Length: 487
Image 1 (tube, rainbow, N blue to C red):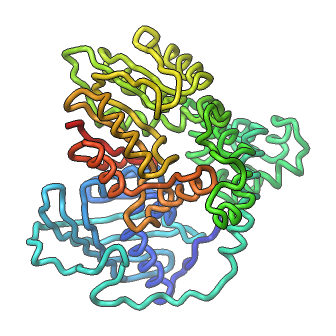
Image 2: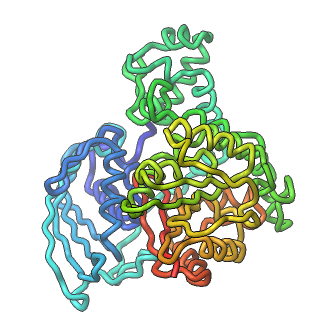
């Protein structure tokens, strides 16, 4: 992992910088951003809850901020010594009912030599307050406080420029490691470069250099001459893991997608794609076959989370329509949780062959049917209890999305629900970064697609006749579910 300055041992100045950086990150309410300040195996005690590892931290923060609204936080340095910092903090928020709270707490932090927080122990008490008693009143979108806090002095540096312009090298390194089976070759046994090279049947020099860079990037750890998998790499990049999704590089780095960014300036200058007229929205685009083959495991957490949010009536037969079904993960998750549900999948014919295969493997062959064709023109049917729209609307303009949602509304029974799964940025369109940056993917690969905010989805749904749209984060993923009922 790269150093994360300021590094211990701390001075008063660098300790204050560390505290200010933590305050800024927590005020973003971006769990992924916050987690980057901690070691992969970080240990937390938050009140009476004990957490281990970054993934647990991200899940905890998603859960926390799902119910803590208009959150504002102030941290203050209390003491420091060596690689440890003590902090006092206060924050204010309101819950789903509108009741406001003020929390007071103390934190003890311990950092490793690279500047990442290894231990965080927090004791917190809170009390209900009236809205008129609030003291943190700065505009959260602008992060400007009524009592200004001096900005830390940061020297100008070209580091970000070089890291960004050379980011293709990191993608290339990860792609090579997956294609060579390097993560599986390491497995659960710390290994030297020579041992990994023998298992991958490659010369040692290339494996050593690649492994060192994977350690720099955070995919491996290195102790002396031995490399080992991080917990995330073991879960998702070792082929022996049930959660493996390394093959997703075949879709994510497919030439048809990467070439779209080779001349992005031309796309922006002309106001249309520089590669093809329709990009990935073209009928039967071959990219979606690879997507269906490789992306299912990556989508499983979001699919399971969405299914948990919308239980169907267990006392009768129910119907679920999965739009742009692809790998089928979302529809399959709903069908498995609802034994009396019949699943109908809609997609292009070649893609649906993969959907059908996955549904059969899940034991759903006798509860599965399909609709082949364009989601905007195919006959959808009617009387559905739920219509799933995962990772689809971002490809189109807001007007086209609204037109499509009217079709969905007509296909639902009264009270039936549409379940949209998307990358949903905050209203400022720059946070949280993983969701907000998805707009760039749409700029490069679609004629009119975008990453829409919840406010925009709410407007589309209301115009299409839906009521009470609700936004639900789907931790530990960066996606959210937007759910609304047909009136």
